Image (cartoon, rainbow, N blue to C red; front, side):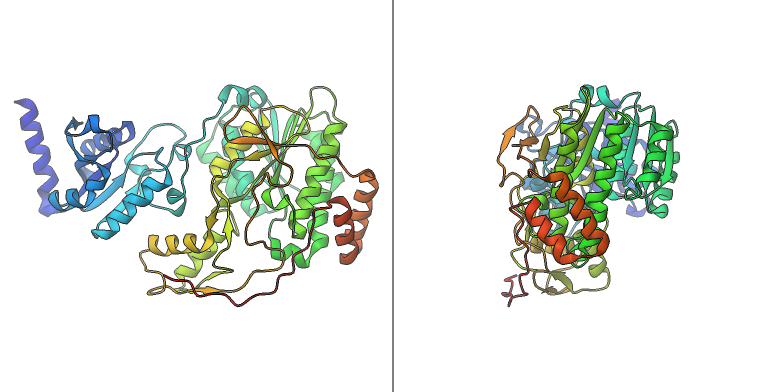
Length: 502
């Protein structure tokens, strides 16, 4: 009787106040869905009233969970929206792959109802789910993969109680590494970077989110060896994550000296100081563009990997120097997603270089977590390769972003093709294509088979540095070909591009 009265009044509250409450259909009757429904019922002032669950688990069909009935499976969404007079659909499955999120979005759009989502597991670090975490669906949700399963003990083993230095700490990957490292109770984190504004923003975030974290902000350039040595002397880092780099392919193609001085010279400085100061672990952030490089940027990152391997061959017992290679990260500064969003905001057109251009993508938190895991694997001199899943067609990504913004491609926002830029490939090869790989004990991390350094590596490295300091572009490219036999500069002219069928 009490339950019946409670359900009656909760139903009445859901329809009360002139119908101002949003009637919410929750996709996912698991732990997260149950928690968020309870939060809605506990906080009616939020204006959200749950009217039903959808779940593909046949054992849950027809059950009542937290006072709300499971009314069907995901395919029943259109029928449930009409029958329950739903105002909004909420995806409450933090572990759901992108295919499930995409299906919900497409079904909700087809019946003209709004949709939102609870973020993925990697975004809910505390494991607690609340109304404040409900947000709009983003493109990374549509590309979401199985959540990363980390060996937390292994990571804590080399981070807990250590002084950790992160170069490029203000950048997309560097700042996320800082956030992830903070979870493992380091003794201190040193945030090193050139951009004072991005470091200032990160500092304010750490003050609010991690008040117990001990950290120091250092404005410095990895190309300045004397300044870098003073930083190592002052803080004595035991673990170094090297994320500082130039990454834009077209910009570095026309300024190869800057790519070499920063990506190669900066890495060389970091490696030498890690050897000099007995750093326990150096993790260098690399890229899929280092495989069979066609650009100066990719070639410079491949040489940076070689520099780390050179350092690993000189490391003392107990020192581990590794590189971690992965593809594009969604939403990183200057990447394609923020560019497309800005173009959509201006009303278009959205510019895509080629209809068949494809890239590997992962989210920033996923990349940072796997970097930490690879750093804990502890095999000196290795190049680790992150499992990037399937490559994504950039044109499809553009269409998804346009639709998520509430528009239709070609009708509301046009898409135009601009041609392949110097140094770009249509397809980034599998990260493992050139060397081949071996499996590691982590399902999402592979090990590239080692390749020997050129016989005269130190001399070639010195000549490359001199050529960059002189701004001798022709000599830079000659030396890159000697250091990396698979480097084949790409100067593909813009071709006539086919029309894209909608």
